[in-house]
Length: 191
Image (tube, rainbow, N blue to C red):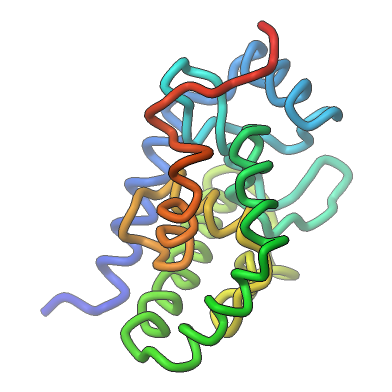
């Protein structure tokens, strides 16, 4: 008999396999540094790319250099995506999503599963990279599993792990479709 956590572990393992099979290159790191305006500490892989190949969301190790725990494993870096999500947050959509989370049991359960997968994925990375995650083991990102706090983090999870994983990340991606989508290049940074 398969334990419910077995499929979660298998999914997390497959995600880690995919991400770590193609570690971040010097070029990836340089592009993300320009996107963020600072060096991307702890970046191990690009989890999602624009249609043109530039990073949209990166995978960050659970422990940054210097020993600082870093729970935001899936980190949104694409400026166009960041800007589009900022517009949605400024419009007050997080309140709507929090109400949806409070009133819809199916969304709440899917959001809890997204939280569990996030933690399982980070655990798999920690194991492989030799990082400690004890200080962040119960934490995911974006307010999961009980509230919607940061749409940037939730969209990053959708981009890295795929649609259907995080219902709020998916709704955010749908909402910003006129301004951003991973299959249409709208990159504004220079090479």
